[in-house]
Image (cartoon, rainbow, N blue to C red; front, side, top):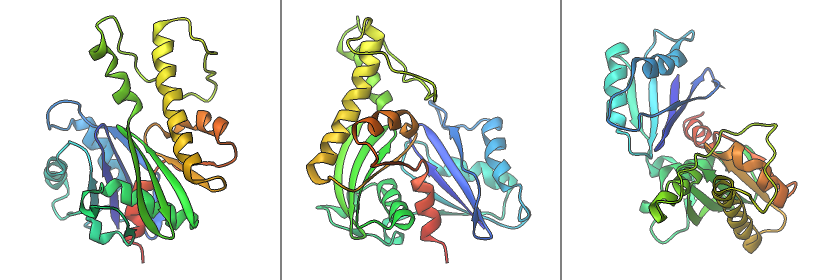
Length: 258
C-alpha cells in the first residue's frame, strides 16, 4: 500500500492506493510561514492510514514541487509510523517522452499531470491546464510531453495589485460555489473589476492557447483553482473542457501500479 503526496506551494494533496483501489483524495493547507506542522494537520493526514493495512508499513511517494520541505513531513510521520518509507518521485520514474529544450528543468508535477491524463483519457492530443499557484498550459501528443506555457495563478495575480499602487486593494480569490453568477461587465467597483479582470484574463489566455493549436480535442482542467475556472472555460470552449481535479495524484499512482 502506498500514499501519493503532491506538495505544492499552498496545499498538500494526498490519497491512498490500497489493494488496487484509490482512496478519496484529501487537501490540506500548508502553513504559510515556517516549517512546522500543526497537530490537526498531522491528524487529518494520518487519518488516511486508518485502513485494514494500518499496522503494516506504508510507502509515501512524494512529488515535492512547492516550497515546503518534504523532510519535515517525513520527520513528523516517522514519529508515529516508524516503519514507513518515503520515496521522492523523479522524472526517470515517469514513463512519458519529453520533447522540450531542457527536460531536466520541467517540473515533476507537470509531467505527472500529463501522465495521469494519458492513462485516464488515452487521447492522441490533449491540452492540460493545471491551475494552482502558477497556471501551466501544456500540450501532450502521442504520449509525449511537448511543453507549453506558464502563467501566474489567480491568487498570485491578485497579490500583485497592491504592489502596483497603494490605492489598489488585495482582492481574495473566492471559493467556488455552484450557484454563483458572475457580475455583468462593466464592473461597478474596484474589487469586482480586479477579481473579474483576473478571472476572464486567465480564461481568455487559455482559450487563445487552445485555439492556436486545436479545434477538436480535450482541454483537461486540474489543480486547486480548477473548479473556479471551469464555468468560464466551459463557456468559451463549449463541450471540450473536462474537469479532473487530481491528475498529479493519479499520475503518481499510475507510475507504480502493476
